[in-house]
Length: 266
Image 1: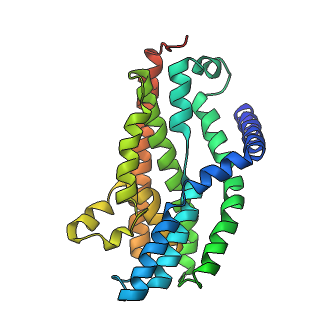
Image 2: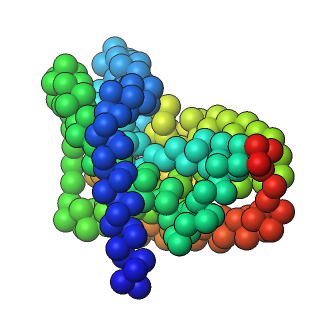
């Protein structure tokens, strides 16, 4: 355990150093994830001109989409592209020879970038709040207790899904193409474009039970105070259930994949 903790700490420091060294590239990546801010401009203007949409007026839309932008920064991962490339080109060989698990390498590398991303994204979020004239942001003590667990669950779910899809590269040439399908569904069903509670009828009910909403919409609604205590507890159970299923799938895919591993670049 001591050796594992020391290795994790070393990987964390390496990840922080890389994130700081490539902060300009990271800022560019953050700017590519500002779609919630585009949605903010659209839906808040519709609410101002035509009245509230469901439970969302213009200030509520501002709070939701700024929250979604920040939650996205704290729960996103890029392991699907890195791990797929390593499997496909043979770079995974180097990680397999190290005395730590390759997935731990990617996990710590992705985690270490989160503080840097938050520091870079926070000023943009504040500027948007000021430009939008403020937001309606309700909160209670119960939500503040649950929110860290929701953010951790969202990150674990995103990482495990991406890593699982990347493991398909053990059998197919471009597993990232499969991730594009996931990303398309994520855009529509996660609350990234529109709060899932505003989707029509049964579509909203189904969407809110899927992993897409668990990864983004649920922690966002929790952060801006849109959930009751019962809804928060239910959402957390659904989220961690999906996260557990994703990690079980990742473990299975990794173990099966390593057995047949033969990199194209090896």
